[in-house]
Image 1 (cartoon, helix red, strand yellow):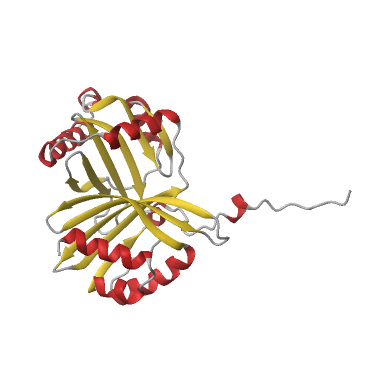
Image 2 (spheres, one colour; image 1 turned 180 degrees about the horizontal axis):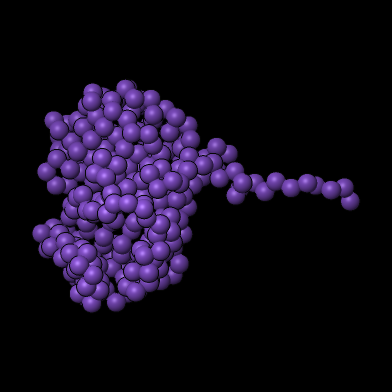
Length: 268
């Protein structure tokens, strides 16, 4: 069984609410960082966490799966389809990082966007273009993304711009979506940051034409993951996923106030 097969077996167990299998697919001392929190450090705690998760995400189904596998690391970009507390369906885009040893998940990090993200036309067009692309190599993709990160870290915006396609877009599941390199830089600059510390890249894993970059201020507290999509060697789409609880967002919010407006009904 490959590491990707082991991850798929875990996702199947989650889809079908098989809690004993969820526990079995994690190593006894597995560590799980979730966008919902808290950090879990045993397979028993992880299985119990999924009991509540699958109540809030009824009829949960991981769909639209995309993979990157590199050594012990398997990365899954997926869309969760589920039903909320009022049984209304919703979707939520997630990026999950697994480290698999001897067929068991020993470490797992789950990043997410807000629910029901909708793309405007320029964003959707860029996404369709990127998802339809076939080709590339993992080594070249990793080199491109790494050199782009180095250029931006050095403050060389002109060099950084050269790595992006003309119609590149950024989809941030919390802070908004924009088209164009300049607007992407402005969006990143507008995101609130902690008063102390410096954000650092903690991992970069690449596939043929996609890559995932993780970044945080404290390596023990995962914060952000960016999924890059390349077309002909240029970055076309950047999808930004967050450890929602880490940035102060209530990830288990039921959206009750948004879905059901409460107001006094006066007699006619």
